[in-house]
Figure 1 (cartoon, each protein chain N blue to C red):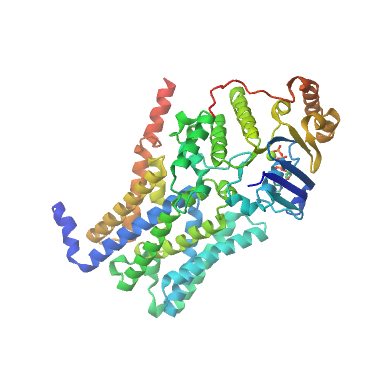
Figure 2: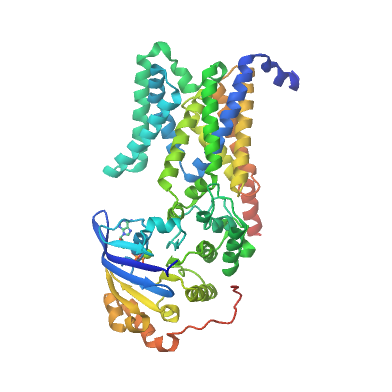
Length: 285
Length: 270
Ligand SMILES: Nc1ncnc2c1ncn2[C@@H]1O[C@H](COP(=O)(O)OP(=O)(O)OP(=O)(O)O)[C@@H](O)[C@H]1O
Ligand SMILES: [Mg+2]
């Protein structure tokens, strides 16, 4: 099969055009946020929030309100719960995160099983970008615009917050506000990612592109561009591949992202394994 | 604007109910370098954190230029350099980026630097002789160079008050002298510098006032009056090694105090 055909043929289906555009958009948005997640060390938090939004998503389905609202309430709520339990008990933070998000997630599973008729569990868990509805596309679009605009406006403040929040406070920047901004964006993008790769894999969208870019650059702006490029590439190619092999779309996207990470890990010019090995060799000589 | 001043009154600070600092009162006015001296755990860093509003005092009050700290921070009056920077040294920012962060308070929401910001950053970096290394990623610096970078950020803030928590820990003699010279120029410009240090020998070289602290403020006043053997032994609670070195400083102080002279333009630019 020739290459042009490989790319062009799927586009004859309207659902594929939509799927590719949506996953590309989600790739950009999640990748942008992933830079902050990896730099702030929030991977575990991302995992927690993306799972904890589950009951909110189900309740929003039932009430017929935008999923993002339900997700937002439960995402932010889970983090407040984590903070509360951590401060009031002697249990360590990672334990608290683990128990809160699984608790929320389990509650979501119970809810889904009781309202089975209207929701397909596998679509929530594994995504359904090939069958995405127009209203879901609209929602993804709104979430994307909100996230990208917020990140653009608060870019410098968020970098400072991730890098040195003590200094941010000492010059009168409201770090509590920034904390909740980042958290809210995390909850919102979890919903966007949920549409494409599903709840289980959304954390990959929120971590892997940032981690890949982190290995490739020492400048934040470059890191952001690299993360976005790798996110879009994985999303688009992953969707194509899943079409051709008739496999899981979310799975293909995340496998590609992971593959890009591994390539960066080995070949990154400065922080890659080969470069490091070469450096230690030259030192040894 | 009126002359700057710090007023701390009757301040107890506690962490989770454990009192770290009892009744501290302190008044400082423009044009001073005040050394903060005490053992490990005496409460020096705690005093700084209370002044910055990072720990909330149980009672009492802290006013800077007669204003509470929150409003002072928004006016870029205070620059604070913590004892150790709790930052990720692999973070993708350059030396120049870090120093520019000192200027955010002057910028609009998007934090777009103006020419005044750029020149303040350049000046700060040149003063600590880090301009050549401005494009380095911050993890690629030595310990002393990191300290100088964060000191440059404080300089770039151009605040009237400088709070420095052990800025000399781990820096070489040359950097130490460079920083002291800088502080002396800033004092002449009317700034208030509060600086904690374990280097008792250097206190007498550049601090015109000292605060002795051990869970509460034991003594405060001009260095020549307060930096006495008796006061130091109270401060260090008879701790032998600390005390013997302190004694040496007291004995030597007549040679070095009270007027540290400015060495002629040693690579620093004003
Ligand atoms: N975050 C904290 N939580 C609980 N206790 C603290 C905290 N920070 C400091 N302390 C306690 O408060 C007291 C004063 O600590 P502080 O850091 O102010 O000392 P210091 O004078 O700066 O000492 P050093 O010379 O070692 O820097 C110590 O007994 C310390 O154990
Ligand atoms: Mg300290």
